[in-house]
Image 1: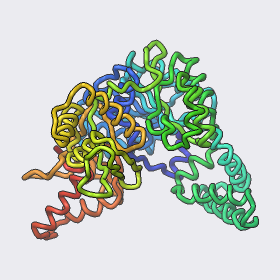
Image 2 (image 1 turned 90 degrees about the horizontal axis):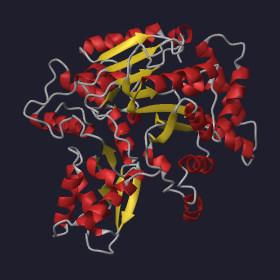
Image 3 (image 1 turned 180 degrees about the horizontal axis):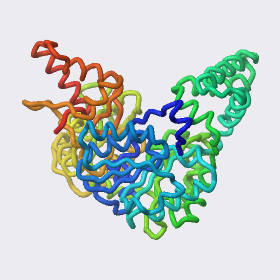
Image 4 (image 1 turned 45 degrees about the horizontal axis):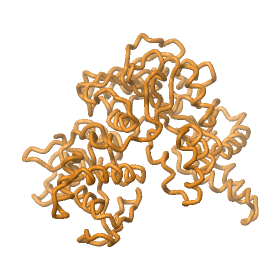
Length: 481
């Protein structure tokens, strides 16, 4: 939870967190058998919303969804309110409120987001957070809670202890950040290259070097930063009538990237999602989770239900190494989606599905349309066995981050129209920096310069130049449908 003093001195700029958008939360919930509320009209609550960098983008993408956020820092809320006013958002409201006192006064919500709170507040505030979720979450609602986890954070906690000791008498936040990085540099060269401790410190130093000053100050140097084991978090939530549903990052639940002997050992635990998840954390030395919770009274599946995929929107920009793809049985094709992931398959239907998805990825597609088109590439009509096979193909690919599944299609233009329009949110954000938010609730770096360039007074572009920029905006999901 934020405090006015430290967040006045070191502002914590907000930004969209892709996994928190209701369109993604609803898709994962439905995979596990929960009839999650419709996304377009969802009631959304975000605790400790800061300046609304995440919530405002959600509200912009879902104009019929009432979105409410609260935070203890009045300056952060003030910045958010200014952006809400500039965008003219009637469905977004930011309040200054204390988590310990907010109660149920804000109403009932279909989706509750608590990103970056749980590990950074004392025990009584953690209790208040879970009580708020219990009391304000709709019967079939979904809550997201993120937190630091052991065993991975044992290393981080060790280094954090050193940094806090080293800066214990430094009052200026900027100097705390400088001194923390100086200590890490000193420690990195204080050991022989083959020293195991040096390897650990170097890895932690690389992680911290990637953090912005605000993230280092408010996350690693915060007065409270208490990681927990996954099973401890689930037990805590259970005490408030809440149950583990899934992870917001679905790929982290599968263990698909692990060696076959390890996966075989873990398979026996798959009937107990909590035990399975905990041992996965042991194997991966996991240090952060974004866990989805629902009311314990809801009946949910312990594993994703393949047939649920039929009711979700599907997208993938995975590109084959060799084109055209040979769709014949037994001929392996290798698909890659940037640096996200890769997949090799010789399954004709899988290859045809990825070829189809690449052709349609901007617009997304439905399961039925994908099935029909993929079978068409194979020269036949689809039948029941194809549908069942495609369910498993897409679910497996989702676990490898090779496809995206959402509850509904995103509301962006797949291609420039005769009167193309870059979203007002992106135009607004382009005035402040290099990062803008897409209409698929992701950040796009470098697009801000393009938006500003295209909108600059007196700037003349030839027809080809304009079209190229518009196509770029469409690929990023910045054009309004």
